[in-house]
Amino acid sequence: MDALIAQYTGADEDARLVRQYITRMEFDTTMHALAPYLKAGASVCELGAATGRYALTFAQMGCDVTAVELAPEQVAILQAKADSLGVSLKLFEGNACDVPMIPDTSQDLCVILGPLYHLQSPAERAQVIGEAKRILKPDGVVAIAYISRFFVAGLFAQKFPELICPEVLSQLLENGLVTDPRADSFFRVGYFSTPQEMEQLLTSNGFHVSSHLATDSIGRYIAEGVNQFTPAQYDAWLAHHLKTCTEPTLLGASNHGLVIATFAGNEGHNEHRFDKEK
Image (cartoon, rainbow, N blue to C red):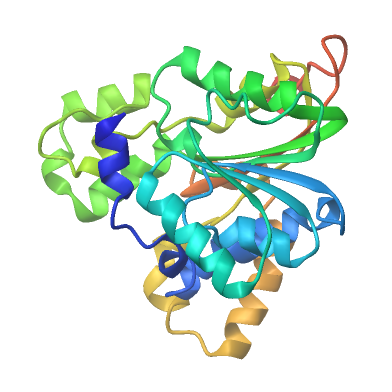
C-alpha cells in the first residue's frame, strides 16, 4: 500500500487527462458514457478520485458527490480545488476496498476509475465490488475502468523492449502482473486484466452489464497522429470513436476499458457477453 501511495504522490492526474488529445479522449469518452446517470441531484460516489477531475465535474453538474482517495496528497489537492471552485462534495481519505463512511444503499452511481488498475489479489477486487454493491441503491449503477494486459504487452514491445522476454510476457498474460525490477514502478504496483475478467467480476457479484467500451480504442497506437489533430479533426475523430468504441473486437487492444453495469440482485442477469458469444 505504501508503494501505491508513493506512485501517486506528486502525480498530476488532472493534467494527464487534458494535456494531449489521446488522454483527453479517455476523459471525453468516459463522460459521454456516464452522462445518462449524471442527473442533477443524483448521489454519485467516486472511489479512487485522485485530484478530482471527474468528481469535481460531477459536482459542477449538480450531483451530490462523495469522493474517496487513498493518497493523502491527492486528497489535499482535491479539497483545495473544490474550495477554489466553490464546489461542495463529501471527501474522505480511504481505501476503495473498505468505505464504511458511505451508508448502505445510498448511491445512485458508483464510479471506480483507478483502483482496479492496482488491486493485485482477487480478494481485493471482490472487496471493492462488494463495497460498490453495498452502497448502491436498488437498480444502482457501477462503472469500472481497467487496463488491458494485451495492451500492456504491446506497449512493452513499442517502448520497453528490455521487457520482451518469456518470463515477463508469461507473467503478464497469465496473472496480469509485472514484477520484473527493470519495469517502471507503475507496472510493478499495477494489475492488468482482460475484458472478459472484468465482466465476470461484475456478473458474479449480481450485476448486469449494460455497456462495455474500449475507452481509447486504437488511439494509443496512433497517438502521434491523434495528438497533431486540429480541434475540428479531434472532434471528428471523437465522434467516430464514440460510434465504434463498443465494438467487442477493440476491447483488448484499448489501453483502458470501461464497464457499466446495473445492480440486479443475487439472482438473474448473471450472464455476460462473452458467454453469449461462445
